[in-house]
Image 1: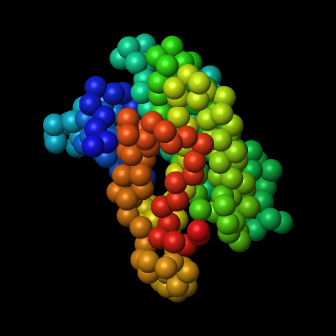
Image 2 (image 1 turned 90 degrees about the horizontal axis):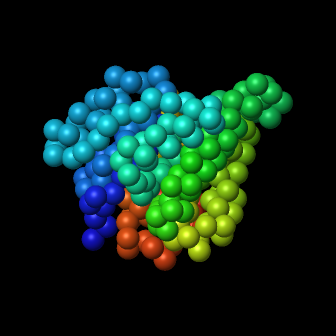
Length: 248
């Protein structure tokens, strides 16, 4: 089940963290994975080489999702070269934390440019290809903070909440073309973005998680792989929460 043989998937921000785990999970299920990066070319190539060493198929593509035209052009070229695009995983994102009164306009604009406009550009480019094929999967990486909020993350939470509305709207617009659009909202996951918290903060966070532990990137990736599969063909406009029960 959940095989992705002969399918082509793009994972933005695929050089590390959840993106890397997702690229590896999709490749393990048989997909040809395009690992996108902005500055981490060496890391992205390491991901692709690791996939190849395990018998999978992967390549790298450098483009900034925050530059809408560059992203759309790159995705169109990838789809043309492969003759198809079956799954677009809009994972690339940044976080610039700060309490409301300390949020700078330029920081808010940058977060929105990458997290929201970048995801929109990727989805737009993917839909153009998927409409002709009358099938496709788009998955947005949102966050638990987009649903429940989090002190000190006003801009980041706003961007992740925006992806939930975006996913539902695009799902309605293109369901008739066989395209499903969903969001995955991870909770407290062990990644580079969470390694900087103090032991005291982590202990307090764990008390709010019914399962009593942090999540693994592979668990989020497995949810994404399911949403990209044929078996998820009747799932669209949904938010799949991978958070250990932290938010229900």
